[in-house]
Length: 383
Image (cartoon, helix red, strand yellow):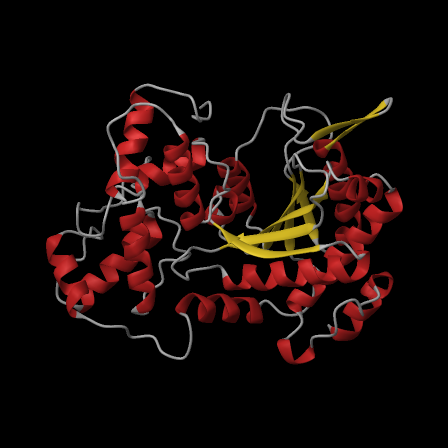
């Protein structure tokens, strides 16, 4: 869908105003004009949901708004195929079940088979018919019972244990590298530079291809979500589905940023997380490692790590990060990024971060200290 933005009018704008009024982010639901007040309310909503904050209602923001209508208990939830129920009520149920020790997987707001199985397990234990749907009786039982899991966040406990059991060796593990954009006319950020024209799609594909070679040399099975030539555009949902189908252990998405101000510069890394504290905590660790390795090895400005609920981060079943590797609109960052030797530094930083992900915490090493040229030898020694 085309993004709905300031100046637009019509039924869609009225619907957006109505939802934001119910959420108490807007006081006046009447006008059907997308004005400054509505733009500010959309920004506040995006910020609260971990979405990209641009004040416009695109696909991801619209899905989040549509799901935000629902509160847990306001409708019966059930596993629907092929179109699963989604919404804030689903996420609240998933987080509640996780707190009680039931494995719904990542709280992704999608009422899928895993959530239905967790509900059925809960129903069986409290003496209800285990049909996997969440209606009034199930809600009554949920409100009656308290938290069961102790000793840490349930999702952290599960993810950390699964990752620990996978072992420290990179050999045989599967990683998906996602060079952003590149579908059809989607070149991402584009900056003319004299007779040259630098595009985000081309530069991140070069980075992805370099990273593919280095990770494959370290023994990993590597898949790229696209090739160098224009193809059909892929949404974050489609990229997540591809990685899930491949059974990937990790996914790293590469992007560049753009800003009206040429003073904006630096690298930032994103992982899945919500405002309520739910997150892919192994993904959060990967984000921190990638961010620190890039900053230390390249000297880029540190724009830190951030939790977001973008579809690519939310719908993947493996630890996933998105790395914005600088601003193509910044003269400082652009001069670095168009240099192949600098891109090689970035690749080495990401490779070091991936290896550190698989080290036990007690055997981790200082940031910037791994010699990735000796990675194969180090892996053989640790195997």
